[in-house]
Length: 359
Image (cartoon, rainbow, N blue to C red; front, side):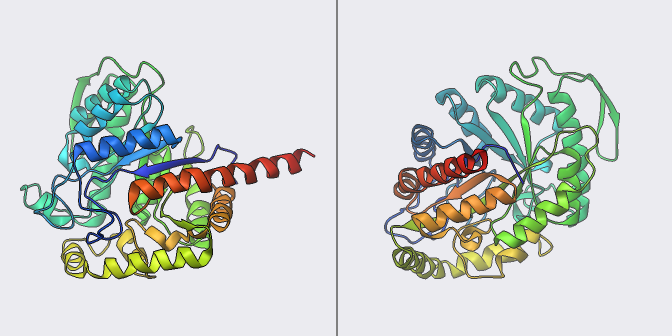
């Protein structure tokens, strides 16, 4: 379906390990230094993007450290040269005028490598304990729709006059706008009906949570068919946790190890479930199959031999996935393994396919 170049990204470790919190091979570390070093290493290894999830308090356990996404994104922008930097944002935490100004600042620090990931909130205490309140699911998306419309137009340099249900903005313009393109990209997460409408109306890239290929293909077909006016065709990204080894048996053994470790986090997961809006489709999807990792994790099926994982990635790309946002554990060692063993196999398969189509 897609002819867009296939790209690989990494999730920043903003709240520690992605698969299991009691892994002796991955001690808990959500520090700025740890995240900086991982992202710099990812850029050196050839990864194309990083996603910095945004939470004010740790969503798993409140007494654990949590990296602040937007200050970290600005610092990463100044330290890197090539990698795309995506910072997640929950609309209720920032007025759209303020957020648009922050985004344009990081866009220009990075020389045109910045993007927003709009997430309409699922972690109840983060908003309720701040006195902001936690509106019903569809009301959060209605708010996000109005919010991102203002952010997008301000980032494009429009002098804005708008009056809506939540915001009144009068004769407002931001300078400088992006010095490198029309505006930063807008990634959107969420798979509910309101989320699909929002990404079709305002997004550039839809982030899909890890799940089997057939389910992902159905999601892509649905959202790709929705009207977008004069906007370019929507692009698609997929979150996935990777366990790749020389053989399938070795990968399965490594996966079982992580599943056993993740079982020890049951009390933490119970707290997270209690704090989560049950209408969030991501959480419903994640209950369908045993898996490790967040945002679908290993449910995408990237567990197997190097060749098997490369083949599955190619199949997802053929279905329309452009960007794979990846998780690993232990993160750095497995990130390096993937770069050395899987990415070259994917590129080789693509080159062979292109040669065959031209021949």
